[in-house]
Structure formats: structure tokens, C-alpha cells
Length: 154
Image (cartoon, rainbow, N blue to C red; front, side, top):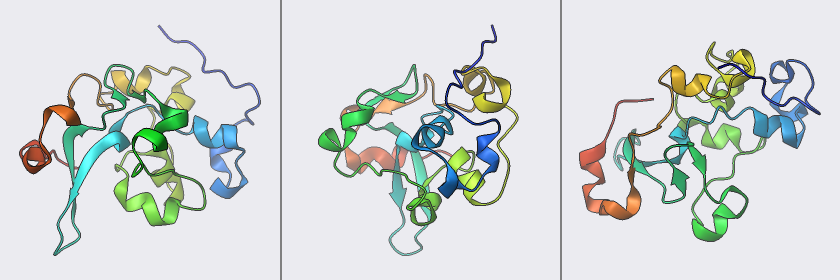
């Protein structure tokens, strides 16, 4: 079933504007709800190469693909990165390849399945672009075993 995403207070096609020109509400609306940014990552100390794992942050709800404590997440996960128009350049390499923030920062378009394009918040899941149902919570996997859960680039 398709239904419209609430767009009250959002300018038409606001995502085509420079990221620094977006209102806080528009910035938040860019998130497609995939949950990929909440996957724990491993970085090769020698090469700097980044590897995503199936191991999800303890705050991620793997059915909604949203943070269970979004407003207070830094209290529970101090290392959680707060993405802003000012920090995107430094953080983009940590984001999945399908991330709207990363794509727009790189001058690319939103994918056809993005909820802002389809008007349907479920489109990210229907397109197989979310982590819905395939993550493992970080408290179930010792950090030394995260390597066993590495996945291909997202």
C-alpha cells in the first residue's frame, strides 16, 4: 500500500538544494530509514579500508530500521556519530553507498526507491535496501568475532 510521507513544512524537492540550505526538518527527512548506518564497522588499521558487519548497534530496532533512542542516543552510545551538513564531508566515507546524505554530498541523485521519491516509507524495505530482519545485536556477538559477520559494501 502506498501512502504519502508527511511533507508539512518541507519545501518541494528540497533535497535538490545545497545541504547547508536545508532546515533541520528537511535534513532529518533525507534519511531513508534503511538502518545501514547503524551497522558496526571494522577498519583495517594499515589500509584504512572500511568493512560493514551484520552486527547492529544495540539501539537499532531491526524491524523498523530506526534507532530506539534517537533523541538520546549519545547518552547510550557516546561514540554514535551525529551527522550534520557541517560534518558530512568528514563522515561520508563511514556511510553506506546508498545513503541519501552521502549521495547528495557527492552531487548525485536520490535512488528511485527512496521514500521521498516514492512517497512510501516502506519502499526502502520493498527494494531490499534496508537491514530489516538480517542484523544481529552487538550484545550477542563479542567484538573479537565481528570479523565473522563482515558483509559486502552496502
